[in-house]
Amino acid sequence: MNRINAAEREKVAAEYEAEAERIKIVAKARAEAESKRLQGQGIADQRREIARGLEESVDVLNNVGINSQEASALIVVTQHYDTLQSIGEETNTNLILLPNSPQAGSNMLNDMIASFVASNQIGEQMKKTNAAKGITAKPKKKRTPPPARGEEDQY
Image (cartoon, rainbow, N blue to C red):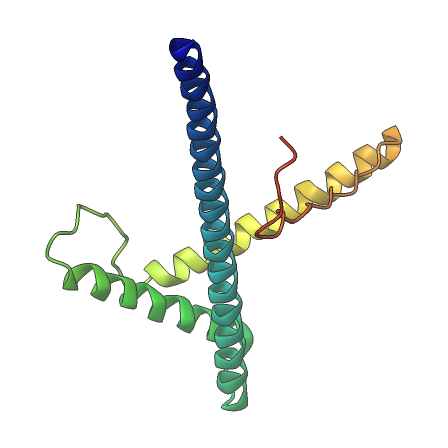
């Protein structure tokens, strides 16, 4: 009888240990998900601020008589040299090949503009083709937020 009781207690203890392990795994997964969400939010905020800074820079340059295309070229060149400087300051950098001529910034800007124009034209053509075929864009699915802390899992 003692062995039966001991076996029963071991079974209950194993169930509690398994449940505790499951709770740890779920908590870790939630923490990682929250961390990734916050990292994504931080990156989005950083990009938004960069865009605002670029917009302000173009406005300032426009106020002194530099048109937006010249301002964009100046900003690209400045960012190019900032990148080169940043790479040069690090002692453990890997080999990175970047164009480093006076026309490099202008060439990069022209390439970016050409790719944006081509992408826009391809997108417009795809819309026309899909419209002709009767295909409409599907609305994006709304993501559901993760359960709040303290809520019990339904597993």
